[in-house]
Image (tube, rainbow, N blue to C red; front, side, top):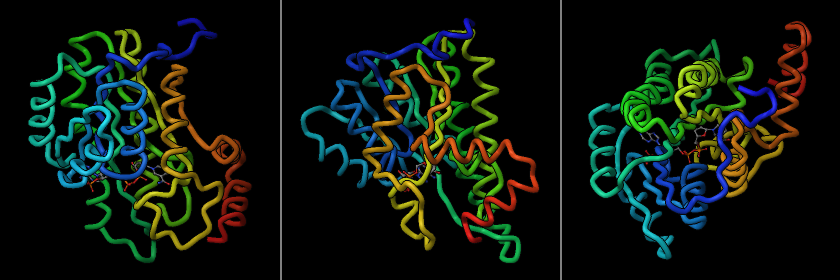
Length: 263
Ligand SMILES: NC(=O)c1ccc[n+]([C@@H]2O[C@H](COP(=O)([O-])OP(=O)(O)OC[C@H]3O[C@@H](n4cnc5c(N)ncnc54)[C@H](OP(=O)(O)O)[C@@H]3O)[C@@H](O)[C@H]2O)c1
């Protein structure tokens, strides 16, 4: 791999591309689906709520979005969804795993059942999707897989004692996948949003710096895919500050994050 080349192939035309977005009934996934459809891609959208997916598909009547329900914690439902999609499509060029949840947790209110639930969704759910998507992509020897992690995976943050580790694991996972898939012609994207105004962040009772709208986040996400970036993160000022903080000695890192978050 040349050190100067982009880490994944650039995409300059979405027409004729088949994109499956998992976790697309609301928020970043739904906005990404809408924008890719407008750019001419074939888009299949998945999440648990069929009614929300149908509604999303109806809201974009200019082109056909394919709504296919699944639950990422239920492996068989992902297999059924893949089969349903491939019933109508010749292939799947790109799988974007966006599905995820958030629940804040601190050491003095640790809830093992809630922790396991979040791990099942944010981490095991992604592995369930990989198990279904990887054989497809490997057989094709083309296409790509993008996984939405979070800036919360860069380093430990207050209130994120379960969410943070699930997202840190996804960051590590995409790095590991890149070693295996890039040589086989398959693109891998690590996608780390900062704060985005979606149902996921509705309950946050603290100020969210540099909060973006879901369409803004989708635009950044798609622009990263088009550039052929591996590490797609936004908004840059916020994500780069966190990445820089991560390089500080721990003593300074803990001091800075506590001061900035007041948590
Ligand atoms: N918003 C932020 O500030 C932010 C920041 C960093 C990272 N992220 C990450 O971005 C991703 C999308 O979040 P969002 O902010 O767009 O939130 P969102 O609007 O709540 O979207 C989450 C999506 O995942 C789906 N989903 C949830 N559980 C599922 C399951 N078991 N099986 C299949 N689909 C499931 C939801 O649909 P159903 O309920 O219909 O299943 C929904 O479509 C998440 O991974 C999140 O961690 C968000």
